[in-house]
Image (cartoon, rainbow over all chains, first blue to last red; front, side, top):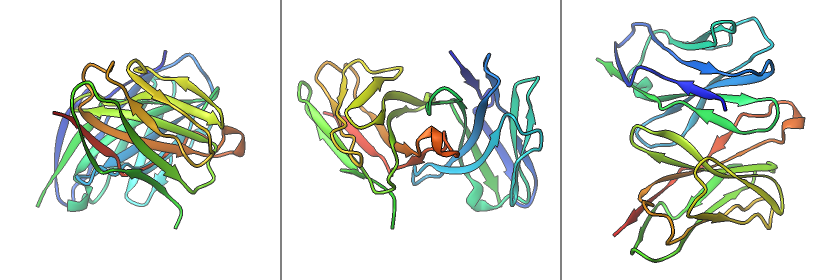
Length: 114
Length: 116
């Protein structure tokens, strides 16, 4: 079974600074997808960014980018120019090519200092 | 507006009672999912359904049951057999995997269930 590990339970960043959230996963598949979801205090899950394993180029969405290292099975999220609204719990998730199930990590709580 | 609705937002249950959580989507998605979220545990999959009238157990299905009689609806029943049902429950849906952007799941606002 696939596993997703987020080893840092909490992180803090100064407003306008850059922060990187780490995620590793374990799989024997070659075709899969990776996601970062954000869960603010409202608890609504919001998709931040997605990465297809077959693409070598790292995904970018405005201030959010990933560092996808397929061989190392690492998928970190970089948040640039951090804003107070970025404070939330962030979940890394893995989806394989056989079905549409996702496996989630335990999440990391990000706080942003003004 | 397209989206996923869950009701109620808060639910209280006495021990020994079954309770049903509602999940409805108007996104025309084929697949639907139920997750349980506990502090420090992330999201754990309870049941999922990729097509009407079919569903599969997830990682923590014991004490739960589901039905999928309509494409847009996927209710979850928490039975009295679930020993520790107090948790936050999230419903999600996704486009069928053959449509291209498979795997990306869209979530409802959640239901907080408390057993008294």
